[in-house]
Amino acid sequence: MNITNASKLPLFPLTAKVNGQGHVCVGGCDVVDLAKEFGTPLYLFDEFTLRHKCREFKAEFTTCYPDTMVIYAAKAFLHRALATILKEEGLGLDVVSGGELSIAHCVDFPAAQVYFHGNNKTPEELQLALDWEIGRFVVDNFYELGLLDGLAKAKRRSQDILLRLTPGVDPHTHEYTTTGTLDSKFGFPLATGQAEEAVKQAMSASNLDLVGFHFHLGSPILETTPYEVAMELILSFAARMRQKFGLQLSEFSIGGGFAVQYTVDYKVPDVADYAQAITAKLNKIISQMGLSFPRLIIEPGRAIVGQAGIALYKVGAIKEIPGIRKYVCVDGGMSDNIRPALYTARYEAMVANKASSPEHDVVTIAGKLCESGDILVRDANLASVSPGDIIAIPVCGAYCLPMASNYNALLKPAIAMVNNGTAHLIRRRETYQDLTYLDAG
Ligand code: LLP
Picture 1 (cartoon, helix red, strand yellow):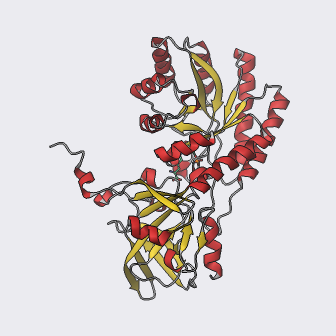
Picture 2 (picture 1 turned 90 degrees about the vertical axis):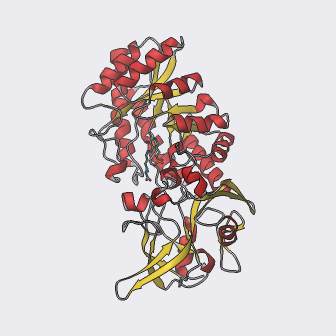
Picture 3 (picture 1 turned 180 degrees about the horizontal axis):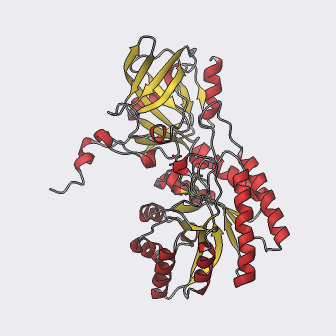
């Protein structure tokens, strides 16, 4: 294997290897065989990597700050099989819709470990979550505060809540995934006095119990400083609220946003770096302010599932424009991974059936959708590629499938879970019948 292939392999799931035939293997399975068996596009998730990431987050944070609870942000990818793994690994779950809630419910996810986020939870969603007796609602706005109090009252219950606060900190990520700045649709801003008003209202609400604060700055966050700055702002506010209203902060959620390495030259902090910087700052501020130590909640999404997932496509047409560019067209595209088109996200790619061959070609991997912006990887170094080859794109576990669409009436891909040399389909590929299945008339 030449150096370029070798440098990309660490981006793949932790079990990735190249076998004697020069094929990429994940979870002990030859991915080229799986592409044949299940068809393409195909998404694979490696169970070992998923479990490893859950354990790594728990271990790194609890070593530095024992009372940490890791709750997985379901929006990054949710499936019953994953929810079962999370449950077994003892993680909680952050959901943002009745849909995510219902998937968690399907596997009897422990309701007390479910946190309900979102800036416009409907009365029906709030009701569903109350009926299921989930642990916490992370209240985003005044409308929700009143609504939830009323619904909890009707149930003669007192519901634990956190307030989502907007600290006004820029995490230096893509503007579409920045959430903690003042001009955001999420949360109660500190700067305008609305956060204080929310505390006042929450503490006087008859059927709500305010147990903590939450913030989420954006995603992915490549530095630890934005977390530290936001913690300082929110905890100073908490100290003021203790003085003014006697608020006891028993939970403190710093949201998600932990980055993953997408490309060889894209450097991100390790889980241990985040854990050390965040908990050191937390310990320091809490001691300085004389607050009691709250439970720390973290909400990784991307960092749990990103590396565990890979996407496989089959090469079809190849168009070379002399002196300009070589387009290698695959059988998926922005319908299964919109991230390059939406955020100019960068990925690496490898020819999965030529993983030991030198990578002399520079090509642009294009999807099959009728959009010029449907490019998966621009200027990828690849082994010499021909129709029928299988392209593997690593780090596709987060935010690809959940944002997939049926644009151009493409069928959503199949998904398989691999582990210890076996692969099982966890979602079948859509069929043409599925495309009209829900039509009425
Ligand atoms: N907590 C809250 C309240 C969130 O809004 C999010 C992500 C997370 C946790 C998890 O963030 P993570 O650890 O996965 O970075 N579609 C975009 C990402 C949007 C993230 C939205 N909120 C992407 O493909 O990059």
